[in-house]
Length: 470
Image (cartoon, rainbow, N blue to C red; front, side, top):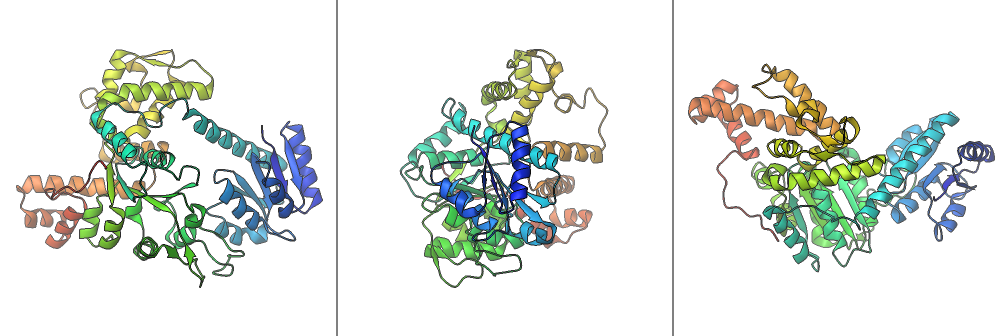
């Protein structure tokens, strides 16, 4: 077990942590400055770091930046006085695991350290497990095409665009592309462009100079610099704001960028892998995504099939997830009956592989016996129109939101709005026999609005397909 590092120039704070960690039998090392910790970083790696912000000779932000550049998954807890909270929250959005306001409750601090340790261990176990099991599971023809594409791209530096619904495993494919490339020894940095507020995303990607804005107390390297000579994975690229699309295009064109508030260009040698669940061609036609950036990203396209397109993989995936859950909880793996497998293979799986994984976690905890029958499946998977009274649409919406939150889904509102508008338009057009003016009138829209919505949602008859397997 690697130790927890405590970094604070205040001896009393170090003493409190040392006593509390010793009482909990947690290994630790203490440092009075960031320089001391960085010197040892050359030869040792901590499990978790707890650091103050304001210290002589080097701030906690400097330490945070260096730690995250070397170990992107290392949890770093920042201690801050209440007067520092505003700058702390704005400055380490993309780095710190959590912040601990001073004065703090010792029990709460130790609980926070334990939680960070557990997450770090789970991350390490997941990295170890990929040596024992395939990186991506799948025997369906559509998945074999994905595997062939990864193989063909193993010696290429080409930019890759991954298309697939939420939960299909786009980041897994991106990581596999990185691991099988000559950049494998360099960093793989992932960022979800839809999960970060617009006002923070520019600094997240490109970093900022000291004094670039309120709270920018030190120079910060962004994801492009963190991924230098490695791979930068831009998830949900379709949601990137227009002004940042322009900046990204310039980086791809010129091979350099400027930090926020900077005046000197920074060279960038990074492979870009982008992913989206959206139809980028439709967003280009609607003026929501730059066409020139689309063509820069769309060098090689990989399409990930949804789970209902690869039903023959459901049994294989479920068995893997049940074994993984059992290993984590140190219990005997559950086994699905043939009837349960057939039932699962007949479901729609709106949440795709991620939803199936969550169901398997639920079964590991909640199923009463080792053998899982249809009756043991989660209640939300068993309700049908034939056996239950029709559900009010608001109740169905609430259930869908709850399940999406449990799956850890992001950008829930965007997806549900698109689904809602798609259902309205489809039913209105069916009711009017395809007459758009009449359908628009019934929906309370103008004809142009309906036409634009149809294009954005990809409801027009498909034009020439441009995606390829490699």
